[in-house]
Image (cartoon, helix red, strand yellow):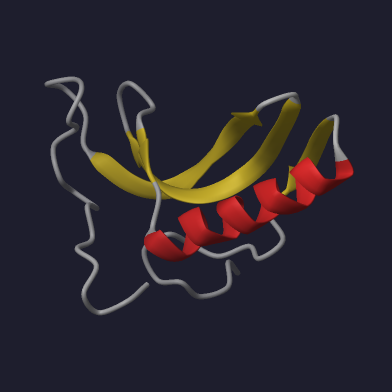
Length: 94
């Protein structure tokens, strides 16, 4: 994560008054025209109550690149996030 990016960990959820964002993972489903991409275990800051997720900038870029590749292949693709990292540290999950 870049130095300029603000970390939302511990911040109160934008959608529910109960939860706060914690380092975790989520599943993202992206659709562009006839192409659908599902990516599991995406690093994100996830609300402890409602599950809303905020993605770090580098993860958003990775998903955009993955969607470009899925769109070139066509159809529906289900895959794992290739670079298992925590949203908070950007380091490898141990």
